[in-house]
Image (cartoon, rainbow, N blue to C red; front, side, top):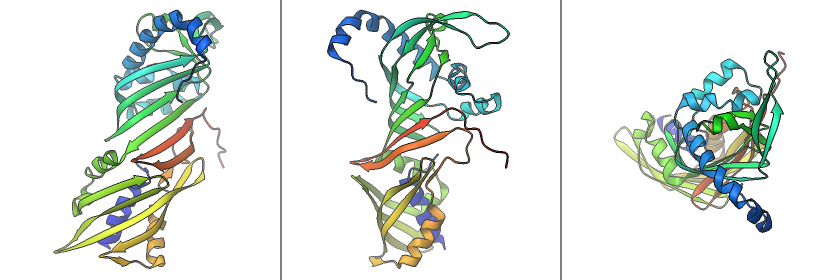
Length: 292
């Protein structure tokens, strides 16, 4: 049973169950170079400040604009990403004046409107793991000029948040080391190739040590659920029966499940490429769920 639990732990990591690029038309770029050069450093400073603390991240109000309530927004402090560095890329920039949505203080405010706004982050610390790269996209969004001029970030409009996340083999191994049950593992190696993830290592069972190997791929069941399909598992070189593997996978899966969390997170694609687990997802406006 101990070996059973250890295998479950390792498989869970490989499924990433631990909880775009910008292109501009050359002619358009020439016409907007001076404007972009003016706003780019201001935006990069403001987003750096917003990602510097959980308080600033919550204060940018992007989740308020996506219709989440105060209790849900308080949870943001627990999911604040902390990037080592970031760059900002955008397209379709316009200065606009819009009406505020405050019923008690109706007024107008100056904003920057973006057709696309992408924040490209490197070495993002998130909980106890590091994501190699993460891009946060804010399409059709507006940022208040008053706050931006002061070096702070405040959204006046947001439609959704696009996520593009890369987690490396080394990132997964580092997270695994933090778990007590992983102390029974040694010489673990994870290899990720297109549509294939394999792992091998040793597990200590009392005074005995067993060698294991397995491989498999990801299968997306829905925007909110992803399974890991184990295609082969061997222990000490002996292929394990399908029933045993299926029993393990019943405990492991789904390796990703956002159906029970407060944020309306939907995966559009999750796959293995050379050296990485790549996930594309969106944080959409709050989903209204039936009380039943």
